[in-house]
Image 1 (cartoon, helix red, strand yellow):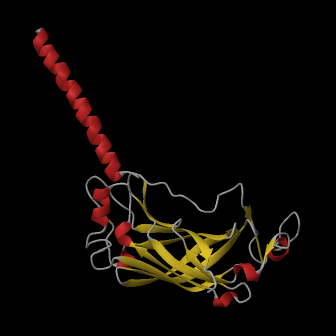
Image 2: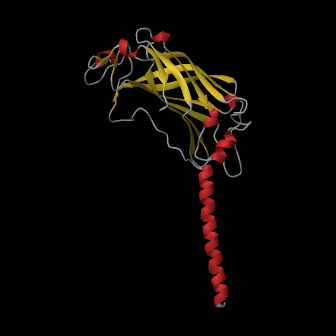
Image 3: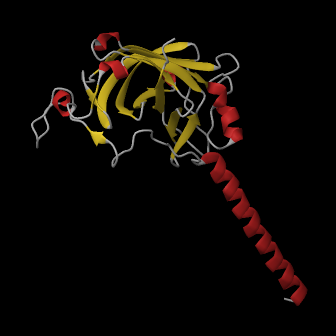
Length: 251
């Protein structure tokens, strides 16, 4: 093999490596996860996890209500209308044959009415602009907005309306995390689906923070989970609310 031929082979091999690496990067960006979920309630550390409503703490023997006696937050401080702020996000997650892929959306609005004295009157509602969904890849985002999936041209918004909020104590302590259940109706693509969110609530620094999750399926809203030669997707869609709310000023 002469020197000129050997140089051409080396150059060609180098080009294939560069193109291959670039192709992998592009494919990984399109198929892989580019969004990390940001939780508004810390998993551990600064917030205190309260025992379930009506249960007792193994060390102190105190219930949620008794535990709230120190630094208790009164109904005067909490009762009323709380609006979802710009610091809030909603996440959709699907599990593919490669990994779990997250879609985030910060275009969420709505409110939550708190009444510690009459939990049955608590209610909430939220609206999400699906045209603002973001997975870190504009081509993939455009695909999920098309008619076969979210069909945002015809149904640009998703909505959730509560039917009941259960499990919260009648007294809160600032910085303490409380478990609750939120039952309601999720509307996507003009289709209603009953949904139950398992949630956590925290009052801290004049804000109420909510983190809640549920699972629905593509079929619930008339969609088929995507499959291709390269990638398959499970039917489940995880929905995660990460909401920061502030009190509505009294006029």
